[in-house]
Image 1 (cartoon, rainbow, N blue to C red):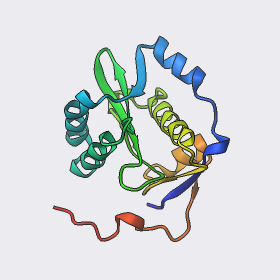
Image 2 (cartoon, one colour; image 1 turned 90 degrees about the horizontal axis):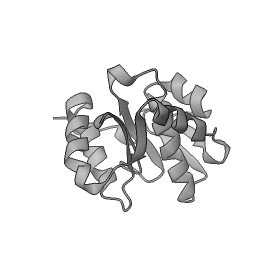
Image 3 (spheres, rainbow, N blue to C red; image 1 turned 90 degrees about the vertical axis):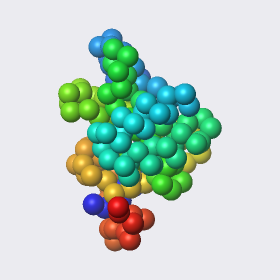
Image 4 (tube, helix red, strand yellow; image 1 turned 30 degrees about the vertical axis):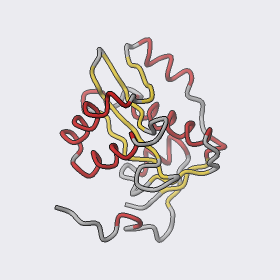
Length: 157
């Protein structure tokens, strides 16, 4: 999976999507430090230890660079930035039951807007899984020669 580049100065709006999700009972917000054990545990169970490790790093930022989607007091999605590398978006995951409702799009956009507010002009989606999703949603383009990128040679165990 290639890394992808996103122009943060040319992002689509997110306000109406957030309002629609809120009306449907879904809240997207920055995760709080006391929630770390819940979020990291949920990520580990649903998406594996590597993503849980990246999520833990996102909680070390002040403010946290981990965002969550909550429905009926339950976690249904998460997205992080500046976890493995500065200026990197990811990981991001949404529960199977919540997919296709705009939750992933909202998490992606909220994270990218947070990165833009920190002064970044571009963001890198590290090892972008759903390449078409990122291209369609935020105009991301594959970075030539970026496979395996920063994740090459990782220790898996």
